[in-house]
Structures are given as C-alpha cells and as structure tokens.
Length: 416
Image (cartoon, rainbow, N blue to C red; front, side, top):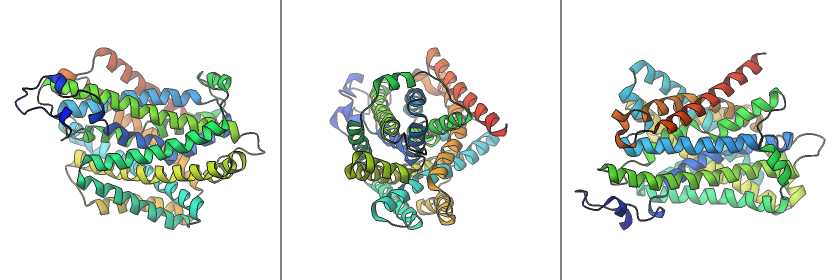
C-alpha cells in the first residue's frame, strides 16, 4: 500500500493523512466497471443504435447514474463493515432467504458467464477465424490466467483489468471520432420514451447489461483487507476516495456504452435490415469506417470478453463464500459456470441473440441484489457512522422501484 494510504494501528495519524489524494486508492471500481462494458453491452447497444437510432440514449444515461449510486453503496457497505454484501445477507437475513438469494445469484452468474464467453469466442472468430466452441474454451482459459494475478496482490489484477478497459475505450473512441455524432438527435434521445414492445425488451436488456447484479455483490469484497479503517474518521476518508473511484470508473464505462450506441446509430443504420448481430456490426464498421475500425472493434470485444469473464468468476466465488460460507476450487467453479456457455456454442444458437437474452436475465436479477443492499445500508446498527442519509435511501429505493417496474412491464409485454 502506498505511503499516502498508511496510518498507524493506533490511529495516531489524522484522517486527512489516510488519503492525501484519490489516486493511491483507485482500483476497485475499475474492476467493477469492466462488467458494465461486457460483451452483453456490445450486443444490446449495437442493436439499439442500429434499430432505433438515438431513441434509447436515455436508457444508458439513466442506467449509468443508477450504476454510480449502486456501486457507491456496495463499496460503502464493505468499508463500513469489512464484509461483502453476501456476507451481510447471511449475517442479517433468515437462512431460507439467504438460500433463495444464493440460488438466484448462481443463475445470474451463469447468465453473466454466457455473455462473456460468447463475446470472447466471437472476437476470436472475427480476428482469427477460430471456431466459436474453441474460442469459448480459450476465453475461459485466459480469464482463469487473469485471476491467477490475484495471488500477487490486488494491484496486478486491477492493473490488468484497467488496461483491458483502456483497450475497449480506445477502440470505440477511434470509431466515434471517425463516425461523428448528431448532437440534435443525441439530445432528443435523452428524453425518455419507447417505440413499441420490442424497444421495451431491448431497454430491459440494456439495463441488465449496464447495472450488473454480480458486481453489486462483488464491490464490497474488493475493498476488504487493504485499507486501514479502524476509526470513523479513517472510514470516512477511505469512502471519500472510493467515491471518486466510482464516479471516474462508471463515467468511463458510461462513455464506452454511449459510444457503442452512437456509432451504431451513425454508421450502422440505413441498410435494408437492422444490424442486430456483432458479426454484422464488425463488417459494417469495416465498410463504413475502414479496416482499422473493424480491427479495433474486434480487439475491444476480445478485451471485454477476457476481462469480464475473470471478474464474473471472481464474483461467483464471493457469492458462494458469502451466502454459504463455502468455497470450491476456482477451476471447478469455472467449469460449472462455463458449461452452459459452451453448450450454447456447441448447439449453434445465434450468439448475438443469446447475448441479448442473457442481459434480460441479468435485469431480472438486479432487484435481488439491490433490495438487500438498500435495506442493509440504511441501518445504523450495521453501517455505524456511514449509514445512509435519508435522501440516499430514498434515491436508492427509487432506483429499485424503477428497475422492478421495468421488469414487470417486460413480463406483461412478453405474456400478452
């Protein structure tokens, strides 16, 4: 840990000495942020932009603000208690509730891994022509290697994930600069509205791809065992730094998501059919912006698949350890969540369609992570001096209500 983050165990250093600047303590939110730009985002944002133009810009803007609040609360819970959200649930909820929360979290983990492995496999196919099934296996192996960096401490893993996030950002900024943006259409797209049932389904998928349940569980664990926080002043100092961490990381993720949608709206519309597959988007970018844009798109997708898959597996370990106080070997965990993704690739399901549907599944999992987070962080007996202010609890409850309402509308539209 850097000198700016050290204080004595006796708490002799004043709180301001704990964090003289935010940079030494940045990192956890960047690991969480990679989940907000995983391959599922590629599928939903590109489909949204190519089909509806700028119509659903507002979904990304609202989702990103939600993500900032949610990840901030998750980090704050970890700082205040030294426990992850699953551990807090096990400590404060009945056993039957915890079993149910764990079961749905495992379903979310499978849906998450499905999106990430499919994305990595598609990228390898676009870059090198590797068959999808083999590409899925390679993605899983690379993700496992990234997780091995944790054996060297937090920083190497965080640095690797942040580096991959930079690759994703650079790839889309290049295409955004070359493709341009329609400011008037962008502003119009910031006004909330839909255009039929399909746009609602896609909006739910975009929400599920942007606000990711598994990193709500993970973020508190990322702040454990690394910062001195024995006094309230020390905890507040760490929290101030993590607030900066969350805002910066989520802003980067939000810019990537907006760039995806804008690029699709600018250069992938106007054809006889909407561009609703990643392969078609890759080809369309090559035709419109040149081979460089297509190459950077595929590299960004590959970086997303590799990084997000490793973060997803890490989250799965946190979920099982927290809810059940059990931990299985990482390789076994990887094989369990990987199997459904490889099965989908083996039977030839359309990868982009599977990606979009996986994000809808994730959207249904958000309330099961978010409701416990709000209930726990509003309790002073759990959070101490870092308990939510009333306005924070109201805002978080409002976010939860919006997400649940959108999922309810999605169910109604699907049934009718």
